[in-house]
Length: 297
Image 1 (cartoon, one colour):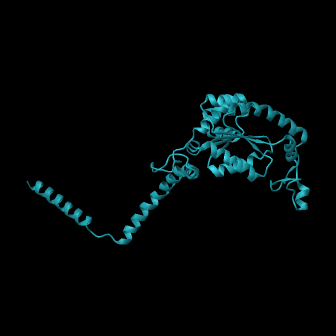
Image 2: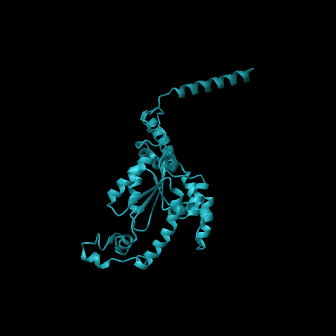
């Protein structure tokens, strides 16, 4: 009996002490210290998670903003009455010989429509770096010094076009497909385009453009001895010409280009747009934009 009373007394005393401690005021400095400790221990992890999760999202959002401004993609509100909301994003192909001005026009198109600019070389390197299945296959061929076969290239392209940025914002294939076989394989893979743009520049103009190119080895800037020579004599003295920018080699490259592109154009007759590439860049761009807008309307 005495033991039971003692135990009850002890328990009562413990409950009393616990209650008193729970309601004892804690100095404000201690509260701040505790809060700071908790914040410090969790803020870094939380920041890393947020940054990591938003890394690619920010990039896609940036492109989506451009696409949305043109009326492509799904309206966030779902009730846009403008008539443009819900349109599929642009799916474009551009082709042009070396020195046709294709690089300049690709930059303008990318800026204008917010599409993802894709070249075969960039896609192959990205797939290899990411270690995808087709990337590993491509790496095997590249490491052995062999040409990557069409079926592997098509796999790389198809995988890239299926990524969220291309699906949401559209894409611009730069110089691909290069052969009729690639065009057919692309179609078999379910990839279709809205517009095939061809920059037409006569061979004699292309040869003049290429042969006159010079590069400053110190800055990497490209000059042209006829159209845009450097004003500084010191820069002029150190300019270099690429080994393949000779007239003989350019003509060989142009023969190969024409043999392939003429056949590829036959696969896109219904969406083919030919643009005079001899005009000034802004005039060429205006023609391209008009053509793209007309097929996307």
